[in-house]
Amino acid sequence: MMAKKKQENPEAKDLSTEEKIKEAAREVFTKKGYAATRTRDIAEAAGLNLALLNYYFRSKEKLFEIVMMEKVQALFGIIAPVINDPDTTLQEKMERIVHTYLDMLTNNPDLPLFVLGELRYQPEEFARKLGVAKLLRESALVQQLRERKKNIHPIHFIMNILGMTLFPFIGRPVFQHGAGLSQKEFEALMEERRKLIPKWAEAILSIR
Amino acid sequence: MMAKKKQENPEAKDLSTEEKIKEAAREVFTKKGYAATRTRDIAEAAGLNLALLNYYFRSKEKLFEIVMMEKVQALFGIIAPVINDPDTTLQEKMERIVHTYLDMLTNNPDLPLFVLGELRYQPEEFARKLGVAKLLRESALVQQLRERKKNIHPIHFIMNILGMTLFPFIGRPVFQHGAGLSQKEFEALMEERRKLIPKWAEAILSIR
DNA sequence: AAGTTTTTTAATCATTTGATTAAAATCACC
DNA sequence: GGTGATTTTAATCAAATGATTAAAAAACTT
Image (tube, rainbow over all chains, first blue to last red; front, side, top):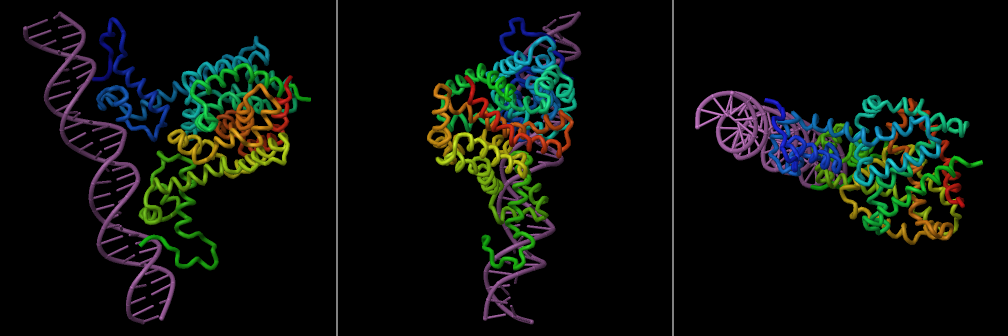
């Protein structure tokens, strides 16, 4: 009855049905959010019959949860190792945070808006599953920040570096269209920020 | 047939029906976004019959447009005069941008996520209506930034100051719950940023 | 090739949801 | 207080939408 792959296409040139649905779901959910997404949109984007969605994933919500978990991981999971690394300096960490995010955002520019937009419906649940609390309290980064600036809450600096890195993508329609930039030009600006943000972050930490 | 106020309650202690609906719509739309909002949610939040919504505003979409325009104005309109003011220094402008936003965000913490979240469906349309292009090209702020840092695109600094100011509210569930903060504590941190962000912005502009 | 299981399809269901309608209630004005 | 306009209500509609079903098609096993 339920999905059990029997054979994998020897030449795996196209994806399995299950993977096609997931791929389409990633695309549509990320672009429009959960509520604005119709299961028919996903089926159409995948070029498949609507019933297959329920056949493989039981419900829109179940499918969404899978995608959401992936995306939350993509947004937060990838910097955990960077933040926790005890063998890099504060400066190195900031460089790596920016690099890691900009690399990811090149392929997933609307990820932050999607994740943070959906997160408002389940703030506590996902924060718990993520273990953000631990990162924000015990990580090497936080300890280094505490040492460097003893009288300022370390979360301020995390807000700054994430804000400088992620916010341009969250406000992208405004910035890009507002400044009359092509996609290429916007991307070029983001590439510039790769080197600029760490410098700015360092300047912020060097005040006084 | 259509709405025409005949009398205004002499002691305007409670709002007109029309205003009650708008108020409820502001609340629900801002909190859940357009797609996740049911007209019945709005009617319930207003304590009114569902049909009144269509009686006064014809459709969910029309009502949304009214609210959206207000909110877009609240998010972008309020800094236009600050940005355009030819009689303030760059530093003063940055202070005022931060102050203006933090004042507004105290009462409307989920405004940025709402507006930017909805904006993705109509990126060009609203950007045009807003005249963002003009602000991002000819404003006094942009000209001052160009003079101060001739070899860096001024939009970088606008992204920075807006990112540092708005992003904490966009990622609020993560920051607040992740750091185990009460609402009061979060607000206190934001109050600290009122003085810190202008200093950081100045430091960023003073590199080299 | 026959038989079995798995996958896919078209058709349909039940619920939700935005909107409408006709009647009832309220209000303005004389 | 009666009359006409305005506002409010309960009931209902039609379309959209998530989900299911039964049958057809395809794939696999022997």
